[in-house]
Length: 486
Ligand code: UGA
Image 1 (tube, rainbow, N blue to C red):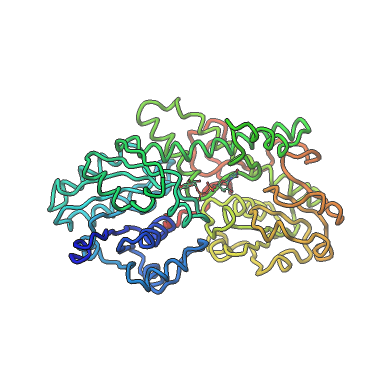
Image 2 (cartoon, rainbow, N blue to C red):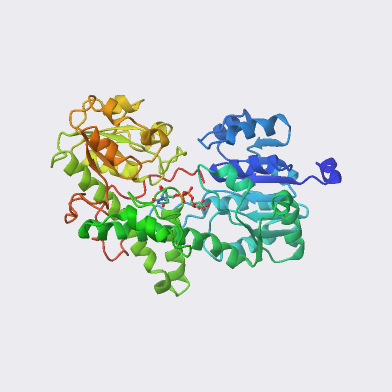
């Protein structure tokens, strides 16, 4: 390592090797840093060290292998090695929703800092990337100085991450912006050295304080969630008025002040980030005495969860009016395409509710079946589209994988007992399916089944504070899992 310092290469460590950490570690190695990544999960670390990505992220595995072979990237479970190795330590552990509240669970972050700090004996920079409630960085900076033998020679910076699962490599190597929350010019200079190739490529850098850096991340995710729920609220209105939400979204998106992205209506947002981040942000605002400023986020959440109930209504209609004894093919389990992540997946939440309501649901996802089975073992899983669709009374598409958009409705027509499809992501060509003899249902489009009073639970678990929801009820539309991967 000393030799590396002489040659100017950065020695960085990445603490937490989930979707964020592993992707960050691989990409930093690709940018020329020497990288040591750590995780408490030994299986994950031995897979990564063997060049085997423990989750599906397009483009990650070839870069993982390339950088392992180049000797720039190493994995460990030892914090002693981490402390010894790193000039810059990136905190990339997950901050999921707490089990019994909407607040963020910072226990992984606290544990990481508690493990690292007492081993820090020389100058270094600790950089937080995890998504946290505003105010966390100040507390961690104090904790570092208190626990580290090097004391104030250990500095903290906050550098939020904006990568999207499925595009993690691209978003890390070519981000839209870098945000550095720092308290010294030295910390800024160190970060500029680590990210030099990205900055030289013209990426804007925002230099700010800890609180603003922390807020940029949760504000960005809240804005994205708001945009999605806005168009899904319009879908509700379209359903009542007989209008077409897709045409509405296209026309809105042509206004450059609005823009077309994150304006795709359907079953709504899920995943390990947007849902838990808007909830934790609302809680934090409350703690800061500005709860009303973010009370709209509760409505964003409620609109989002209502979409799941709406899809269940459409499936019931598509199945001929009842779900009892009905067999259903669920195409998609991941919370979005190009990912095997099933955390708070709308597709799985709907599948679980259909099952609760008496349907026999068979799920097929190109990459997420195994993760889905762990969370919902009560559902059946098929290893192909045609196996899932055999003899079913309705087909439901809730993750817009390209391979579903390309399905041939003519070839599939004879597989099913009833030709009825619910396109909860607007990813199929409705005319093509209708021409092949299918009943085609899509939320927010003309001809969709009229809105009915909610016949199924549309709320998630543990949210007594949410006004529109009946307290104490427990539905299937809550968070599906928090498996500690981010
Ligand atoms: C999100 C943010 O987009 C990232 O910038 C952020 O870094 C990340 O969270 C994080 O906090 O780590 P991600 O959760 O990977 O990224 O997924 P998104 O692409 O944002 O999609 C979230 C959900 O919204 C998915 O279920 C997707 O299907 C849904 N969505 C997205 C819609 O329903 N409509 C849209 O128009 C767009």
